[in-house]
Figure 1 (tube, rainbow over the protein chains, first blue to last red):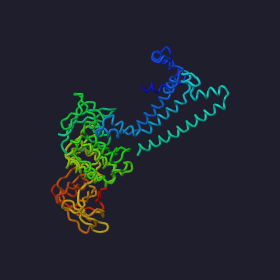
Figure 2: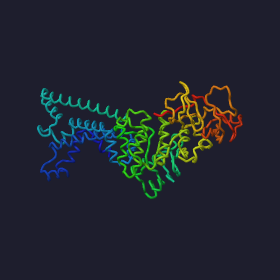
Figure 3: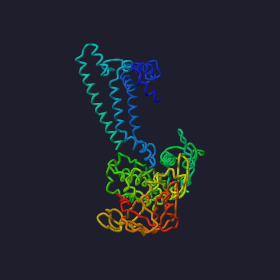
Figure 4: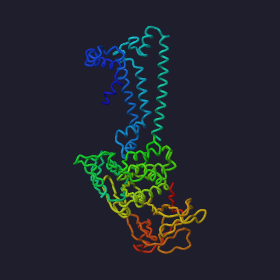
Length: 182
Length: 359
């Protein structure tokens, strides 16, 4: 299970994209269902780029969340159980609040990775301006066409977004560690 | 019969194989570290599953490998106090204590919330976070939290191990009080012989996953097999007394039973209860009344029992109805020629008596 979830992390994103193309492509079962229900293909739509971004960033997020949850002292969870709390209540009232910072940090990391997705997106969703073109794809196109001055705005936006995310991520992790060590 | 255990659990090279029955009151589980004490507690609490066997509390089966029964922890009604308190760090003292209280049906509650708070003297720290509490305060909160959930059995895993001496006195006193007034049965795990002698009604000695001995706690002093695992140098007498008077700027007096002990200056008021600790090895035994001696305490009594182990002898001395254990080397015993029933004098410096002033 963990191998399957982590696979997109190790694979070249283009390969992940290729697999997704097979999975949701026109000939696939999912593609057929989509055509039947919505009269439309999935590939080369915004849905495909969302799927690509999710699949590629998912393992990063899941791993960060697993680490955060494992960081919660098991004796606290055991104490809650011995005080009469069932597994669900223990999770909601003890585990979740104690790993909350790590959880949000994981989601943030996944989000920023998703925004930056390139390889899988271009394979499964293409690079259609106004439809499936994401920030990195737009930067790529503009640099290719020599419109560096137009690309620079997007580059600045991406960089600022990345820096802000990492600062918040770091702050959450430090605060979370302090909370669980007290 | 309170708790019935007959379990087997193996992991790696280690095998836990315990067959024991506990009675009403406080049962001690004594053994060196890595002897399987914690695993045994974890199995009783339901944190771990034995490979096979049976665990029953008040005749209700909690675990049975043949009956394929394993009641989850939250339905066992077994409290657990951890060595490091394990308080919920994101909740206040109040919310910690309320946690189990609110999950308990009203009909099962044995103490009311306010009584519990005043019993453990938590009134002034109720709305504080738990992260800045002292070790003694944390353990008081942990005990109150466990009792709030109205357990039928309380497991205590070395609850005093990380506390300083003054705090230990208060907790020991409260455990005795709770056991007596609520009739709550407890299992007390420790490798401190003094805590065993001061608190428990009976003891089970565990070594290397097996039961080595069981019975009256005095077996810790006179069972040859157990002797190897006991750190006798740390054996203390923990005595309950009352502050009687303040003698000078450096000395006070505490009455324990009919005996009066001169101790270092106390800050408590006259009439206040207090526990004092006296190391067995700090007591000098004499057959004759000494004279011209600087020690502030000379107590007359008689030997009610001699417990001989490999190198040491422990004299159970009766001092006006109070039992005090003095440790001697076997060599001294032979030279003094002391036997059961002999009159003796125990000599103690005031500084050998450590007050366990609580809070």
